[in-house]
Image 1 (cartoon, one colour):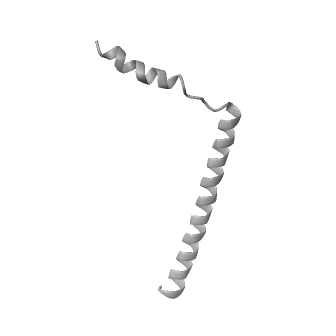
Image 2 (cartoon, rainbow, N blue to C red):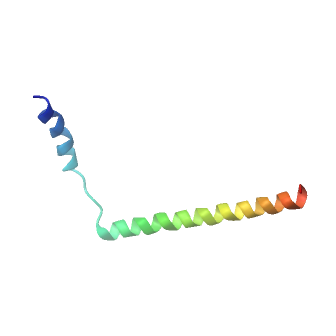
Image 3 (tube, rainbow, N blue to C red):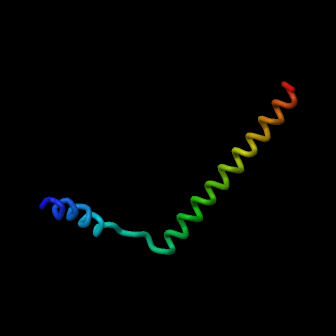
Length: 59
């Protein structure tokens, strides 16, 4: 049967995975959230500026 041979490859690769610690996971999560909030603020400010420019010079 070829199924055991097919499954043995991925299983041996899964054993090689090094998972992050709880402390690393929290640090990475906070970093991603901070970057997302920063980008949202910057894009929001650009949107406000663009709206203001449109209202001032076009409408």
